[in-house]
Length: 159
Length: 159
DNA sequence: TTGGGTGCAAAGTGTTTGCAATTGT
DNA sequence: ACAATTGCAAACACTTTGCACCCAA
Image (tube, rainbow over all chains, first blue to last red; front, top):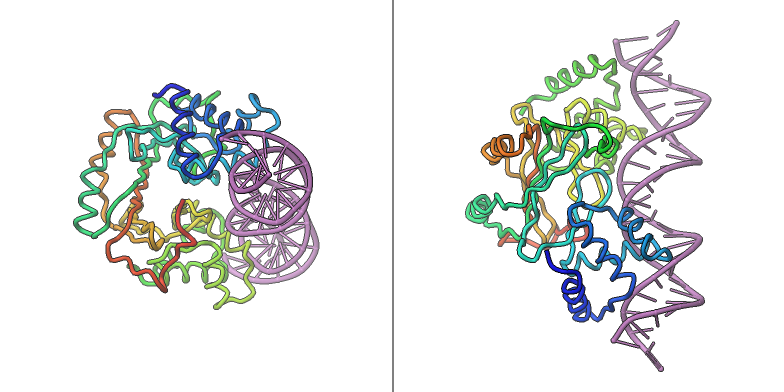
């Protein structure tokens, strides 16, 4: 996990390359993403969190910034099928997406940080002449110790 | 691949269990899905195709039917991140979803019918105490022989 | 016959866009 | 200074819902 200033410098550098500016709004958004690396925040959630630090921000700015950060490969835009896009800061050392365990009972989401697909990607390249640049692997099911209750997000259940 | 009447009977049987009726609209929708098993149709696409055989159908009926068929596990509802849900008739012999190759150049989508994840699912169960009931595996990249042109759907490109 | 199903139009989502005002470099 | 960026509101695209009428069992 990088420290905040280093990350901001890195972001600023990438923005500059694209003739873009590091505004206060964008800075706050990056900070919020950094402070919530564990979650997969939706634009609306980012908006709420950012509003705490910068009340005048508009939702459109959040969408525009997240889209921009996605193009710069600073965040990954994901979609778990619940109708909202979710955004994650991209690790520098992990080119590939993490895998996910989605609990059908409580809707919770766990990340697996390892990359389990190296071999399969090789196989795809061999058998199908398809050069893989990214992948996505989600498992749906139930974790046996599912603690329904406070954390239960059944309403947000995927698919 | 089942014949049409057999599939309709099977659907009818499942509908009956849920106190639902096999209406003409529902029958036409199932026929359309059966005739386009290779594609991953969106609701709108199903609507267009159904309209050819049953011009008076309403879009809402298509959505309601696809949702119903999804609940009955007759179709799978998928989401490739392009903002539309897509629906596929579920194979009887393949419990799990197929895997997908999504070409970043032309947006085309190829299916891999094999299940490559048996071992990984076992590992998830062991290491995380998570019972997998379904999964999803998509690879993004480019196929070397990408024929841009007629088939190019870049506009619909995922993510 | 009657409860489930339908079409239509209106209402909901989540997201994008046009524009005048504002801001970072 | 001036292009990039912002907030707002309106526009969008996809999907869901309320309701009076309709039809399959």
